[in-house]
Image (cartoon, rainbow, N blue to C red):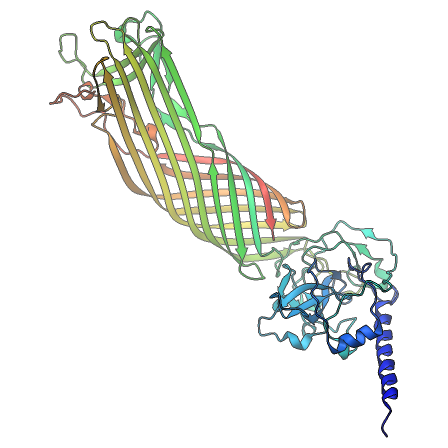
Length: 621
């Protein structure tokens, strides 16, 4: 028998009312029967009318909600607190967002979901799903725990006709009211991380909105609701426990082996004989600059590290770092006015002669910079050092062990507790670059006080060295991580080539007031050793380090550490200064030159030990 159109309308209206009653009954169930969920939008979005529900079940209106932080909701009893939401079709993909989304019970879109791994999300539309690891506004299908992977949801969607895109509640209707339960604040990150199949566990990752969530299992006897603080990447060997990207910025305070500088400036007491003034080994001679290590103090620097994991299990990553230090420098200057005080530059004379030109035995000698009635002038010394480096490497986990936790039982009234700590070892391999550039520069400005030979003399000696290392970096990182603290130990060695470069230069300019000329050569840099010298040597550069971290926020931690690095064969300027001088090579040179070709260039290797403190911030995102 045919029914009248009015009768059909009444039946449809009755069905809609029945469905609405079922949905409202589930939503407004008392706290004793069903755990309440919380959303930051619940007080601003009232209930829709039945006519609106009916209209939306036919054709959803275009709607695109912002994607705030995913709302934590209780999982199935005994599984621990997990993120759950309803999978819907994205009602608005015109802005390029994915086809599917996750919504809370109020219809607010919380995350977008992209299909991957061959998973057909369409067949799960309208189902309640759990999130394995929350990594941002857009998730992958493989990050979801779908109904086929978990027990039937305690709160399934009952009516197929309502398994559509859920809209936010309208602002002109009464709002939902939640039960007022006194929250208990617990100092816990809320991380549930377990690999036990019988526990059906996952990871509670990502920030909480700060709302009330059920106490892990929802058991009546397990206490009231807890006010969970913001969650973090808790210790785990499972998926999503370390974030996809990580970076750090560190302030460095390191100490370096100083470089050797020979005696470069001396003085003697007034009244010293001219032949003995400033000569090493003579009574009263004092070294003003050189004769030991220089640039051996501390240096400030910065180091930056950035890395990314290639998968959800964080077992392989690509990371790079770069560090640099401020230029360390030292300077010295002395002036003798009218020849006082006595100033001199010492050297070893390889071809001395007496007053009548007869040769003498090689001995210590000095060039006068300031001596009464002979010469007045200024001498200055400048030295500097720059050190920096960079690297790019792969990081592969080879061992990970979870310690502690309650993964052996799924007692409905016992929450699944994450491991108390995790121990992990990673292998690292990649490229390492190091650079060390140094210089020693000596200048003189002299004015002759002899009436028989007046004039001025300007001269300099410069010794520059450059060391560049390129090689492979191999090593291991051991990490221990708890809820609040982390400790990492680094041991690695870089094997490769060090390209050494030494540049020796000198120049003298002489002026008699009328004419002037410039010639190559100073005092310790003469035509016998001036030039640029290069070579390549094999280097093994070990490095060890330790770092202690404390989590300030779930993603941010403060760190303090220590690093030691040893570069065994570098060229440094002071080691390439030869104090043996043949005066016949001093400009102007008159050929033929008699005597030894000194000073001369010879390669010398020196070690560089750098070590110090690192203080910084690490961030996972």
